[in-house]
Image 1 (spheres, one colour):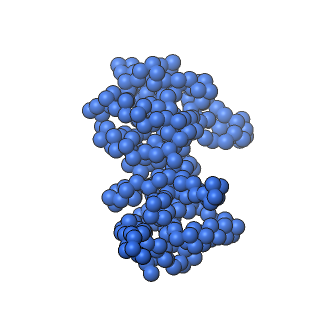
Image 2 (cartoon, one colour):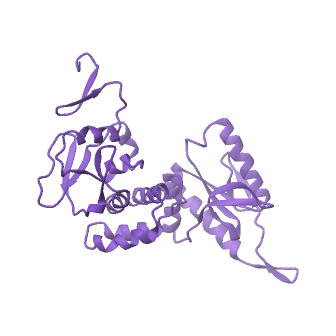
Image 3 (spheres, one colour):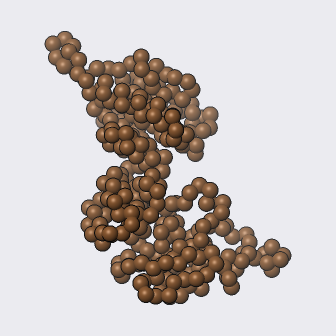
Length: 300
């Protein structure tokens, strides 16, 4: 059946129909059929089972091994396409989901906060907080258990910086760039209302100085209709005195990153500087002009 293309071998002694989608969650279930009873799926594999994608983009085509751990002084899992380690886990750290023993959402978020690269760790923590309504105080209460563990310094920062309002990794990465530049944290998913009726939600905003940052991912900001809607929306925002800074994935790296961060720093500094007008102090209305098709704000 393998030669005929009807089955594919996922693990030694375990096969799946070739027509089934090859996903990390599916591989976790496959592994659970042959793993010893004390093995627990963990880290990015557990995150995938919980509905959180913590994989690098390239790994979606070439899936990594299923990550597992056992309690200390137990025999580690040694099997092809499965990585094995050991870890201190409390009973509350483990749950069975779809027949698979996995680390809980809380424990998985904390482990990945230590292990992943900084921006991926923050995006994953944001996602877990949003999806499972995990409170920051709950995360902070778990920190003593991680004392002395590699990555705990990063974990403390990630917990402090995490915000469940971020609705995509790109928004999380944009917020991290802002924090790393020494700028204040923006409000996530700020709802803009007129006469008490909500009309727009802004990805990241500084409402008091009317500055917003919009992250344009490819999925929701690429078609002609989506671009037209973005243009109308941002034109209205600018007509109301808002400075709109548009960030794309490529703008998070290299020289482009410094460019929009400089725009943001200037906008915040100008927005908070009072001017004397008609016998009182007012926050100045900042005029901007559009630069290119993306409509990013520049000085005028």
